[in-house]
Length: 88
Image (cartoon, rainbow, N blue to C red; front, side, top):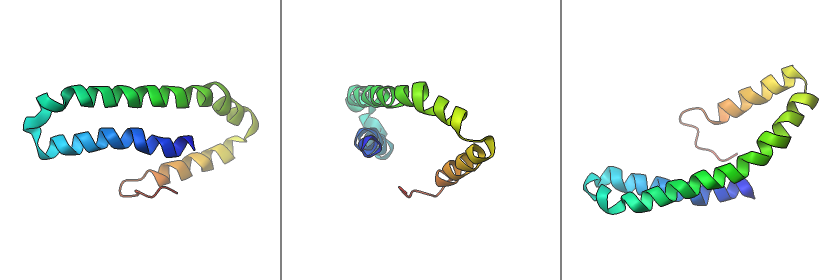
């Protein structure tokens, strides 16, 4: 559920950036909205990542063998490879 919510917050930032890429002259008119969208994105990820950093990642380091963690990391990196826009 939380990961699905990333798309909404991130989507607003991406949409504004795409608009500004297409029409750079609108930067002054959209700067405030982009700043607010970027701040909302920062707050969203801060709330999302804090529990992961405090609880989940330490538990993974403690409970999952190093070789398995290496495989997980490779899979995560492969999912984020350039050109891979899947939402697996």
